[in-house]
Image 1 (tube, rainbow over the protein chains, first blue to last red):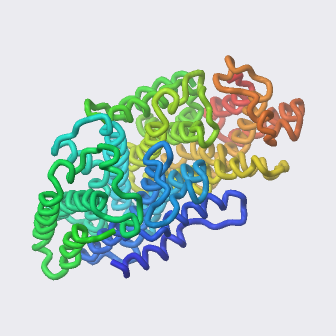
Image 2: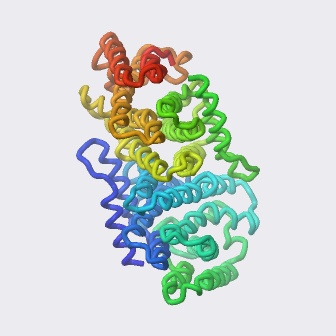
Image 3: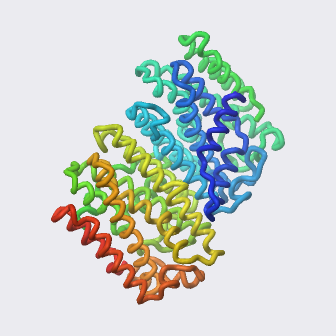
Length: 288
Length: 288
């Protein structure tokens, strides 16, 4: 995962502009948040997914950089005072704290826009149909019917009593769809048939859910220094989470079960699928 | 222009989701701002540009809807308290006033994302290479090196003394690039050669500049009721504009000259180019 992160970091740096003009502050903010040291889980999933199908590494890296841009933009906007009002992210000042609110709004906007620009570029894949498939599916995963819809649902949820089904749906929209895109992108780049793509969707579904339960567990149990962001905010806000509904022990068992189930979906890829199977276990065991 | 607006409005309405789920508030906000009654200049430019090259109307309308989504998202974010802090837009409450700030951030994000989703869809053009061209050029026009960069430049400009060259550059980034995309999209859809695209770029360049000077004149001279948004804000903020540098009379003459120059670039299209030539004159004579 560290190796993938290094390569994606280098590409992200090269894709974000630099200039002497006054708007360079925007590029600094984009770079600051992109380089704030995340786990790069989504890039890792893209790269490993692509490696199942002999996709060239340079193509996979561009798709990986694109999804990380989308993820980073969502964090920047999510941290804004009007949303989560978070001061700390990945152990560093959030974008609007480091720069200012207007710059943070624009940095998010520009990263989202750049993600689509990167995917539309012939360097991402020689076949424009593949590039359009990547773009259409990313727009769906990140947009009104995916991540943005999930963020809105999350805002509304503060005044609602959610059951297990609603929380699962919320998670799928808010984080699951983008994780699913990351898992499927390699199969799109490799022009795989529907049944292979479906197999990766099943993996992504279980992985995403396991990931969110692990996130809720970290919020309930982790320390701020360890997790690198404010913790205990869910309980404070009286928000229903997997942990508040299932309790810590059952949530932990559920996450572990989902991780095993996710891994199983990739059995057909044999040895090649090992790192993705390991990743499913990693997301529930991580401490940050 | 009213006819184009009617068709684009219908398409925009159909492209924005509707649901009974809690996140429907996001879709309401997207629809509210999309339907807040703008002039639809950019859609008009796309549709008229496409009509020069026998592009099917349904394809042109989708590109037109996409650029209007990008324009609307930029207005929503630009109006936020952290940016222009505007209460009024097109004579109605701004998105964050009508809904709330978090919803407004997300509505902008989701409209931007949807624009790329619309362009990537085969319904926009049968040739995926054309769709990728539209997406790559829109991402450039709207992104860090275009509109977002221009917005950031504008933020920085409040503390700078701008000369004519800098204001021209600011305008090109902030509004010119998206107008240029609107002018060029029809030629992309019609798979036109570089020299034809270049001709439309020249038109767009002069049109965009004329448009901005007219905007500055409206801010300096218009009434709030007429213009439909707060006026006099530039002078209040001590901001350099074309009007503050050139004075009202010279600015008006400059805008008229640019409109004529813009129209001339389209002489080669004969009768077919008439509405676009008229549009150049319209943008400098408009009162809203």
